[in-house]
Length: 123
Image: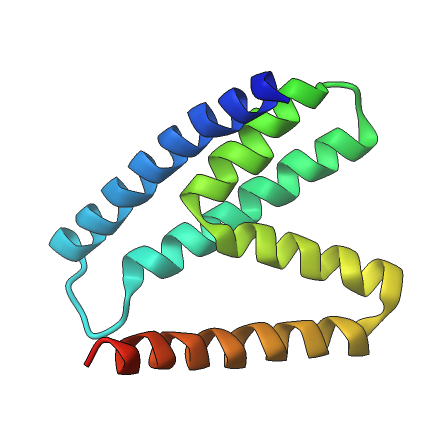
């Protein structure tokens, strides 16, 4: 367990640092009203986690340790949106579209609601 936590933490550190750099570079080179850095990180993270999960599922190229380092750690640190999207995809496959849509709707609406609540509590 400790080894897995260390691997996830190492991957998360690298992913978080890269996420920070993507945000800074996008703010510098693509200033706009749109959060370009967040969108690029989210979409890139989704592509990366899709590739890694596909490889893990279809080949023996990704060991359990590499899975923890890259999928839980790196992708989780780079963007939790990739994990959210991957879990939603898995939910569509196993439980159906309606369950997945409910999960997405509740996650987004409640997430925004809790951000509002947190801001309200600190006013």
